[in-house]
Length: 400
Image (cartoon, rainbow, N blue to C red; front, top):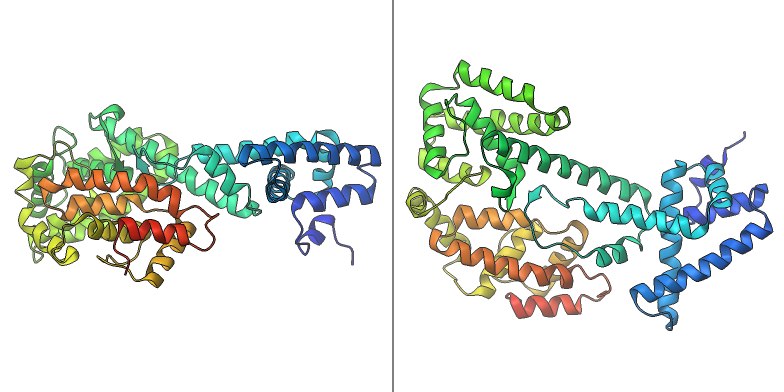
């Protein structure tokens, strides 16, 4: 039974570039002259990469540069050949080796430029050089494609969220840091309530909307209004909007219409999921009673920065909030952050939902200042023993 070169490649663990090059030499697509040219270009490219990320004069840097350039070429080749070794070999014959390396680099830069979550207005992000350093050490095209699709979904969600904000009369320039799903969710509830003037509500306005739907249900006028908005929505945003509509209908509406659920508890739990304007002291009093109990329960009454940052880093890592971490728990948390990244909005949502109003601005500033350094230190994969990451957590959080 005959197998194609692509089928055989499935069982070959070498980088895709090496497989394509070997196939090209074996089949005569790449002759000795072209092979010599590829080797010369590769040597030149390795020196350039070593110098960019460190220095060309240390052997470990050169060896690391060899891995990087092979990964970059492999990434570009496999993507653009569709995994076909024959097509890839012809590409190596017809185009320079360094053009393939640059192609892989551009793919990673394009990924870096895309949003890493569905948040709008986040100022802290990994530098392009750090991102290139991390991704040029990865070999998997499948991982790149998964991440690209995920970030494309985030990009669409952000664009959709800003469209809905403008639909409610709030230009993108007036939208600050926010999870964009909350904007879409708010717009859906506003239109669904059938109010004459659709606008982004403040805290009091959200409560009024919820109480109105609880009393009267969703009016036919509201359904009609929402249908009209979805008809005007650009087709690219429909999937994102329908996802949030389903959440409102399956998760929020049943609770809003359930008169047995206390309104104060409902408001406290739904408010962080929605986008509000002008949240001021007059609105804060509506939430204070619900907020104080949860804040005290989670913080244990501690107000020092180190304990609060420990809670925040736990939330950002997607683990239960604690005011202190053991060494083993701290190591597990660092590894989880390196694998999955930071869930920034979990922290900001917690502050908005649970912290006393007068503390919220200071707590958000505390978290953002900490996150700027945490991004660099905790996600630094060169710290293989985690010693620098543990030292950073011990200095800023509570590690016992």
